[in-house]
Length: 442
Image (tube, rainbow, N blue to C red; front, side, top):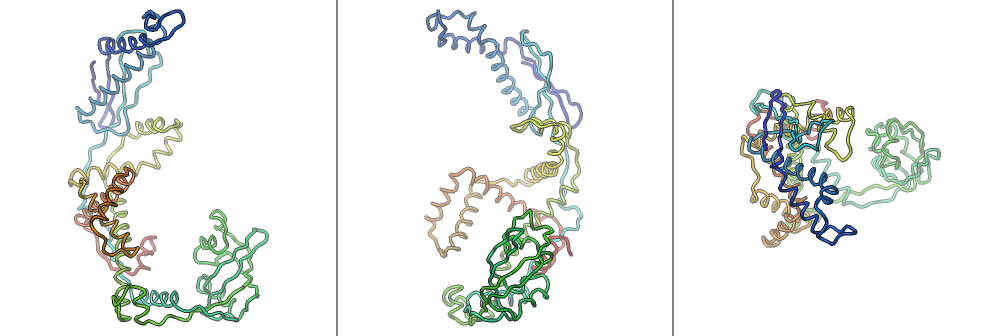
C-alpha cells in the first residue's frame, strides 16, 4: 500500500491511497473461507459448497468491506504518523466510473488542514473586569424583603399603597382567566398602580396589556399567555380583586437572625447587612467572572486572525450529520458554527501552549468542593470526608457527568489564565450598573 499527499494550499490537501491485490487478497480469501464453512445452500452439504459459488455470491461485498477497512486503518495511521492537524474528517473524492473489477485501486481523500496562527493574550484591548458591589440600596431592599417574607400577612378591606392584591386577570376573546397575586410596584407606570388605590374586594380594574410591565415576558406569568403571544400584545384585560393584604414587617431581633443563619451567627442589623453583602458579592463574583470569560472569548475570536478551509468544511458539513444537507443548508450551518469552530481552535492552542491539562486529581478536588457546597445548602455544614468521597466516586462513575465537570474545570482554568494574562481595566459597579453593562447600556 502506498500513501502520498499533495498540498493544494496551506489549508487543503489531497491524500492518495493506492491499494494493490497483495494488500487485501489474503484477508478476502480468509473471510470467504469462513463463509464457505458455514454456508447452507440447497444441494450441498454444509462446508462443501464450491468456492466458486461462494465467490460469486459474496465475493464483491467482502472485497468492498475488506478494502474499506484497509483504507480506514491505514489512512488514520498515516494522519497520526504525519502529525497532520485536520478539521472534520477526510472526504473521499467521488469517482463516477470507479471500476471494482480490476485488481489494484487508487483512492483520493480531501483534507481540511487546521490553520497556523498565534494567540496574543497580552494584546491591547478595551475589556473591563467588573467587581460587583452590594451597595446600600441593595442591602436595605434585601433587609426589607426579609422583613416582608418573615412578617405577618394581614387582610385589608381597601387597597392602599404598599399592599398586595390577589385576583383574576380575564379576557374572554383571548381565553385569559388566571388568578395571581401582585404588588402594586410591579407595574411599569405609577398611574396603573394608582388605579387600584381605594378599590375593595370584588371591584374590577380594567387595564391595557401594552406597556403594563417593564418586560412583556411578565405577561406570561401574570396572564398565563404563551411566549409567542406576549410580544406586541395590545388588549384590555380585567382584574377582579378577591383579596387585599399587607405585611406587618418582622422585627429585626435575635430570634429572626437565628432563624435565618443559625444561633448567634448574626447578632445585629449591621452584622445582618454584612452577611447579606458577603453572600451577595460571592454570587456576583460568579456572574462577573462569566461575563469576563465571555468578553475575552469574543475579543479573541474578533482579533485572532486566520483563514479556514471554508469550502472543504461546507462539503464536510453536508455529509457529517444523520441526514445529508444541501449546499445551501450547509452554507447556513457553516455561518452559524464558524465562530464556535474558531474559538475551539483558539482554545486548543491556548490549552497546549499553557499546559492547561486536566488531571484526575483536579477533577476529583473540584467535584468534592461542589458536593460540599451542595450539602451545605441542605444544612450539612460539616460532612465527613468518607461521605463526600463516596458521592464523588458515584458521580465520577457516570461518563456524562465526568464530561460535564471536565468542561467546568477547564473553564475555571481558562478564566484564571485570562485573569492573569489579559490586561483588562478593573471597575467596581453596583449590580444594577452591571446589568446595564451586560446589555450594552453603559
